[in-house]
Image (cartoon, rainbow, N blue to C red; front, side, top):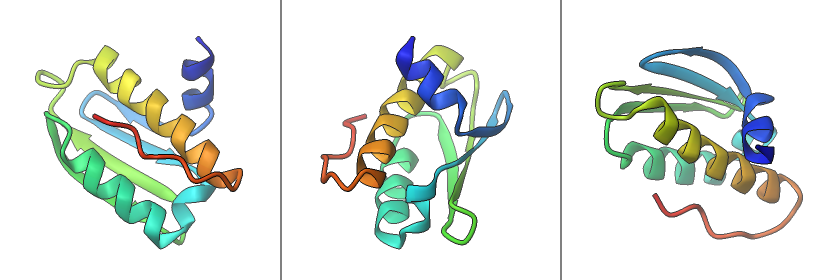
Length: 96
């Protein structure tokens, strides 16, 4: 439940097949690069576009391959990681 609340505050738009998240840690190029590479490897994800100027990531995915529950699990793990990075910690990125 806490993870879902954490994730919800970063979702700026969501429709099946497309989600945009905004997080201040994504303004760091290194963080955005790690997120883009790892999220692109998630089964069902078609594309991941990070924008370090706005601190956002746009994820386009196939909702028949990546169901909403799995998407939420992935998003919750990444929201926790981004929060930790923003807090100055050096956590390992979530394993997907």
